[in-house]
Amino acid sequence: MAGMTPNDGSVFGGGGSNAAFKKQLNKIYAWYTGGFILFVVVLGILEQMGMGRAMIGYVFLGATVCSTPVSV
Image 1 (cartoon, rainbow, N blue to C red):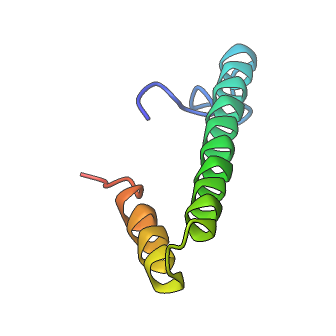
Image 2 (cartoon, rainbow, N blue to C red):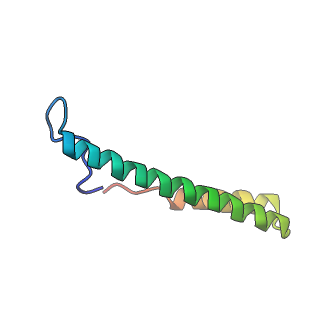
């Protein structure tokens, strides 16, 4: 992501920018983990409502492929 570098180019990194980077990274990990848990819970609910095992697999595969970032 733009503006998210772990250090300022020096060997040991910058104190302030490194702390800000870690804070931002923790926030991203928290959102990703929460979203994944929510996704799995929704799939569980859909399974209880009668969605077939094959369709759940296709939804999981499709969500995985669609959520992968594309590098330019």
